[in-house]
Structures are given as C-alpha cells and as structure tokens.
Image 1 (tube, helix red, strand yellow):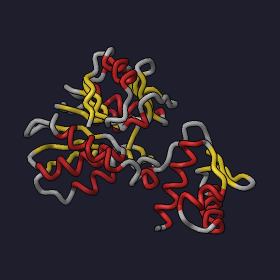
Image 2 (image 1 turned 90 degrees about the vertical axis):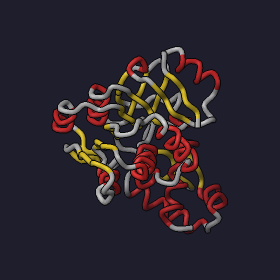
Image 3 (image 1 turned 30 degrees about the vertical axis):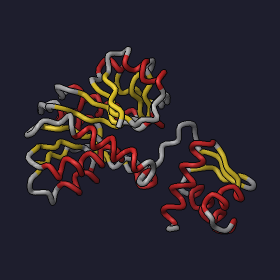
Image 4 (image 1 turned 30 degrees about the horizontal axis):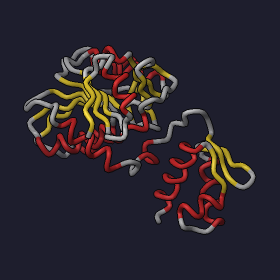
Length: 252
C-alpha cells in the first residue's frame, strides 16, 4: 500500500472512531507497527492528529481533512452521486460548482458531456477542466484555502453576484434538518451562500457520512435547498426529516 493511501486510511479511521492504537492500525493496514508509528508521527507533525502513548486521537472535534487525504474515501458512492446529479443538469446550462471530492467527480462527468458553462471556485476542478475545449470555464477568484483548494472571500462573492447560474451544486461537511448545511470554515460558508444566491436551483451533494453531522459554520437552512443527492446508506428517519423541509432526496 502506498504511503498516501495509508495515511488517508489512518485519518479516516481515527476521525470516525475518535482514537486508535498502533497495533489496531497495523492490523487494519497490514503493515508493521514501526511503519504505523512513523506515519502517526508525520500526521502529528502536520497537525492532523494528536500522537498519544501507543496510538493517536483526533486533533479536534469534526476534524477537517485536507482534500488530498479525502481522495479515495467512499469513491464508489461519490461516483454514483455524481452520475445522479448529472441527470439534473439541462443541456447548455450554466452550472456552479464549489470545491469538494463529490463535486470534483461531478465536474468530470459534466466535462464528458460538453456544451455547458461551469463556474467554479475550486482550483483543482478548474485545472481538470481548462484542457476541455467543449466546456466554457469561469473561475471565481479569492483567497485560497489550502485544505479544500477553494478560492473564497469577498472577491469571490462579488464576482458571483454578477452571474446567473441555472443550477449550483455545493458540497457540505454536515447536514441536518435542524441546523441545515454546515462546513468547517466561515469564509467558505459565505462563498457557498453566494453560489446559492446566484442560482435558480440549489443542489447539495453529500454522501451519507455527512448526514446527521453539524460542523462549525452555517451555510444555509434546508429551506434554501431544492435537492439533496446522497447514497443509499442514508437512514429512513434522516430521509423523512430532510423531506419534511421540502427538499427532494435523490439516492444513488
């Protein structure tokens, strides 16, 4: 297993469980305890977790993983979500995309279709699309967030205010019927709201691990969302609560 894959799995496991010991991780990854100790120390040095005697714990509540460590997690579910979201996009539409692993998957699907305009603040999405001659690309500028590869802030919001989007897709870090859509960063939340204000239709893309979570900064109440595209692991109770907020739930 490549080191990048190991560290991504370590972070995902510790984020989910709250803590893990060296021998547990060694068994999970099928590597030596010495390898796990080195990986844990490097992740500790990067501020992504706290090293403890014999293991590690999460660095903070609702740890925000950098995008490079999220890549590969629940990839099959995210591809199905992206395929379902593609069905909501009319031919020739102007589409807004915020950053995130699921919106990145949707960008790849839309690029294969061509004939659309994509407005995004995610530099990784822009880098993938700039070589696609069949896609008209508009990149929203702003302050760069290194964890999400997004450009955010007042400049991004002013630019988005000049556009009309037929449909906007946003990624979230948490979604509940009571607290609505949330993310880890306040400035990112404000830029996400600017995408929604400019759009005729607002869609949230979120795999089921995000449903039922609440993170630091509120993006919007569910009343401002038309559709949620998620995977089949969302519970019936969660689906009912979201649908009661007049949000259409599409499961892929």
